[in-house]
Length: 475
Image 1 (cartoon, helix red, strand yellow):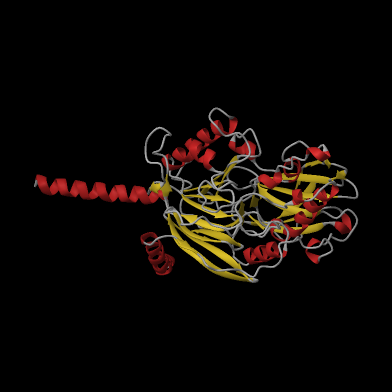
Image 2 (cartoon, rainbow, N blue to C red; image 1 turned 90 degrees about the vertical axis):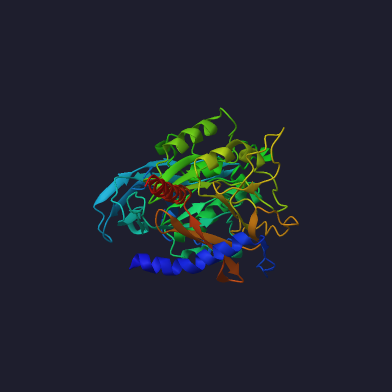
């Protein structure tokens, strides 16, 4: 019955996908009457500090191991270090287990970060709701999360995709709309707080406000982090020259579980997806650690267990906006051939403050001295999607290149978020949802065919027809 229902739902999406592929790309003419691109004042209720002495704040979780049955729970206390302990269990207020973690802190100019706690909770059961408590005494706080289903080829799962969020009223609209989507985890494509738009102690203060701002989601489901340019925070005028200092102290990743040498790039498996996070701002050319790690990680992917291969990166590989145009070209030249060879399904990026989706195209035939110089249709290529439209204070990137390139399927300068709902090993349903003056409006939707399994089905059909034909000839 579920299969029949999915087929019924699938029909209009298939038609839409077919129509989009036989027509030229679309540049939306929608003009949004956006709220001002300024950060919400610090005394707004969305930044409220939890009540109580040394109450944990800025609580967030991320996946804690390779396969999803572990989480890293993080929070900050300010009055004193307190305990780095999490109590947890499978029923509300019945905390039969506990885990101890570590505490760290840092300074940025004259700002002191408070006490940052990170606790790995592992050995969890799949597809199970867990309740957890952080903090001590009357100031303790309670939350819950749901572990993903066990790894498997036909396990359904729904991801949200958010990028370049910031902490404006537009950011709040995006966050609230996402929380209504029913997605189970966020794939975050970089540029978190935009605290680097501030100076001196205000940098750290705006990291704290952002942590409280997103807590209503991040405390209850894993956000899978990747870093953007606004996490670099290279500020020599304040004697702050250590890149990613705030980000790396606050937002851990399970990089060691995927044999990465850096928290900036790593991989996880979740439900039926294998997710690879790359760093646009770490060395990635041949022989560098990230290059070597990606080569090995792509060879570890088992599409019979995790059919969906998803890549997250901050800078778009393909982008037709005037903003940041061709900034992803160096990574494209290094990795595009690998993406095609390993049948990557989709690559999500941020950075450009607009939305854009590509057709399946590639530019691997050009080698500087010869070959085709322009991207061409390529059924083996990923779909490239830019979702740098979370709502930050820099505003929208409203100037697209004209004419629209052949590789661009749909583009619009609006704020919003995306969802990718995996149905089975062969199909997933994708939506981009625009924040239309405070309302969530579905604008761009299509069915994504799995590159590995769809191509295998086609090959099996061709082989079956070939063998049938040979038997007929032989008879």
